[in-house]
Structures are given as structure tokens and as C-alpha cells.
Image 1 (cartoon, rainbow, N blue to C red):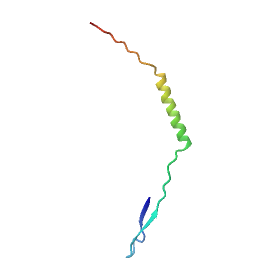
Image 2 (cartoon, rainbow, N blue to C red; image 1 turned 60 degrees about the vertical axis):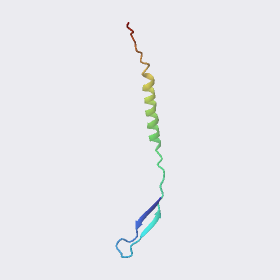
Image 3 (cartoon, rainbow, N blue to C red; image 1 turned 180 degrees about the vertical axis):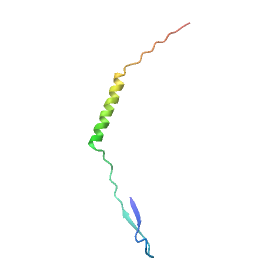
Image 4 (cartoon, rainbow, N blue to C red; image 1 turned 120 degrees about the vertical axis):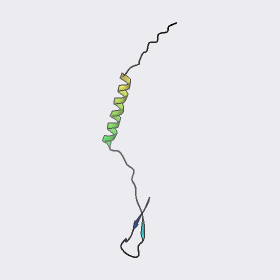
Length: 61
């Protein structure tokens, strides 16, 4: 990325200075990964223990 900034805003010889901006990728902390995996485990356990829903259908003539 390139950033632009005013060099000397108070003088008559005003100009812009271009400079490179470094951006680093965000890396989650290990505790964040652990909480996410525990949450997925709880969701999976809840879905598994839910069981199958059985429905009865009565046909009448």
C-alpha cells in the first residue's frame, strides 16, 4: 500500500510525501483457536445427542 501525507502544511511550498505502508496479516492467538474448536465440539455434541425425530403419519380414507 502507498500512503500520502502533507510534508509541510504551514508553509507556502506545500507538497505531498509518498511512502510505503506495511500491512501484516492478523494471526489469531492460540486461545482463540482453542475456544473456536471447543465451540465446534459443543455444537457437534448437541447435534449428535439431539437424536432423530420420529413422526407418525395417519392416513385416513
